[in-house]
Image (cartoon, rainbow, N blue to C red):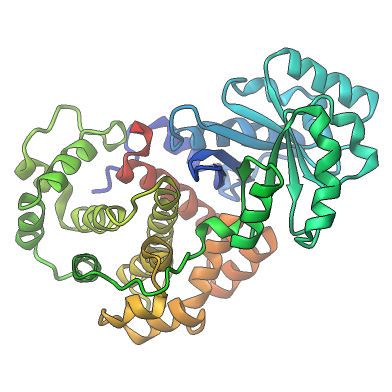
Length: 424
């Protein structure tokens, strides 16, 4: 039995909205907050909604509730607003101490828009200007906004171009956020130019440290994750793994007593917890717990969250596919291992060489080729909020979009539950 959403009203929201999040880090690589990307789910429950603007307002308020569950204390949520949403006052449905109202780059500073922003500012809201590249037409926003996001990729990562955009901003005293940071060079340049917040693919890319080798203890953990992906792994064997590790035992009890699990009384016995979970859920939880132990910093915790969510999303997709010879367990492993080079700072080839993985899984992880590759591409499209790519990859896999949306939303909830991030 799947307890992951019984009696949990949050799971009802997950039926109608998909949330992807992109972390924003400060100079210490700690998480300042997330840009939240919302999409209305294509599930049947949404078919009756015809008014695009009211749907968007609902998606924003519901999506925020969903995402907030997986955010740490004091972290902020940056949410994109169109002109219509700003003028309709949708922002007031969000808490001023957490939400950051992000003004999309195509919003024009008309008198009505400026009045709406001044009112939000007076109401204690934090305002951010998105994708700024020095456009003169957007200058009226600058005295009002608290954060300016400068698009490094849009400025071709050129130091002189970025400097010419940044210098005039200093007199406004706003916080500078460098977005679309692709590599170490971008990050270093942004720091030198006075940026204090950073967003981009760089933070989920492997930072390979020359000469670093996979330690025997970490290799043993990776091998354990692989063994746990065998559906024939006996529950007695799983129980032995948990009971021989105090940290795992405590975390298992914390997990099973968490709000979302649906147990109506406190479970304080590991044996009882094992019985309640059953073999399948115990294997899932153990694989996640072992992988999460590889993350030591806030940045790597974010990568761990992403890899676990990918694993659960792809596993769910495998369970939905009919007539396709793809094991859900193999798909869970594919998602889980897809960021292992980032977590360990070791090339993927070196990590995989110590594991006896299926050759097609290795091909997908190393080359993004073969029959498993579209699964990884679909998860990446969801994470980036790329609508066209989501449609293309779901279609290639023969999965209805409503099904994929639902799997993605539920994977977000499940990951937050098993990693206990709402307790941070």
